[in-house]
Image (cartoon, rainbow, N blue to C red):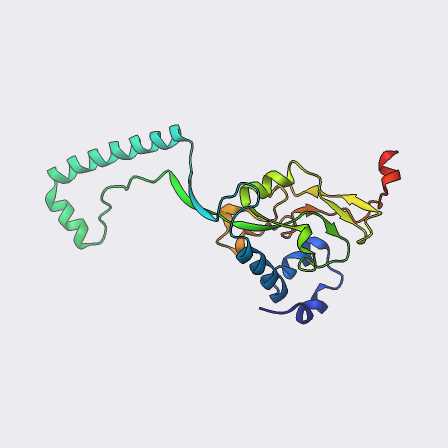
Length: 213
């Protein structure tokens, strides 16, 4: 794991989408994130801890249809095997024996993780440079809901006189992660680089007066 100083030259000229995932792999972010998660082990919204849940992989009717087809195949196979024991032995000796098909599970375990939520952003601040009052610890479900029920602004500086309204990444819904891919790079969303937002670098900074107009 590298520090920010070690990768700073690699960030020159990169867009937010390309630079943000590199920042999320630094020692500074790892330390910042873990400190908050260790201090707040439950979601500040739903009050639930990090947990494992079972989710349905296929539509239940589709799964039942597949199970019926496999059961029909297995029953047919057993009948054939009972009538042709010598052929079964021959296949086993030649490693060509297929056997019965297993019944697939229609669920898988997904980790509902505790995540760091930035209540707002500042133009030139790094992800770990925020005061705790701007940080919230949420589970992945609540993180998604917060981003899709609230406007998350980027402010030009800490005076908060000028701001831009951020647009949520359509793929991750603003969370920056995809819980079904947590096994790979902590589920980082590649569409937004883990930032959760799609930056419009060309749009103007607006003041309260501009917004009222």
